[in-house]
Length: 116
Length: 113
Image (cartoon, rainbow over the protein chains, first blue to last red):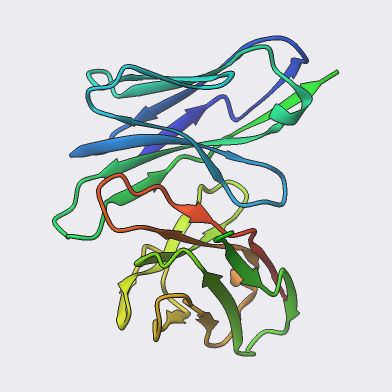
């Protein structure tokens, strides 16, 4: 069964500090991995997408890494800001035999609270 | 600007009533999805559509139905609302292709009393 596990479930950090979120998956065959940011009361918004051959990808102060061998990904937030307070969701796509798209497995998310 | 909208944003209903949640996107995306999000669970797929007249069941489809009569809309119907269907519902859309980033609507918060 395809699964995506995220850790920690929640964390509190001080403004300006860095943090790293973890994502472990057992999705096969792997297609790509996305990190989404979900602000309270809003829908998720894509931050990064990584395919099998990519080890790292940045989007501003967000840097995602992928180790396809160990099936692990991380999302690093640098110099956190109050606006980084949100849930971060790891989503892994499996390739399916259908023309239109992939099968997605969602992690439970990590809730980040940035305090001043 | 192209967007995806959901209505209503908040809904309170009674057990046994039929409820329809609307989803409308203006990106002309082929793919549309309905998810529910509950505490302790990740987003769970209810139904999805890869085009007009195409609908498919997701992992938690019991008690829900969808229809796709045009590209822009995928309404979600709860045939007979149950308290277990109290949740936040998200609609999403994506373009056809391998690298299909899904764009999510703002969500509908449904309370079934």
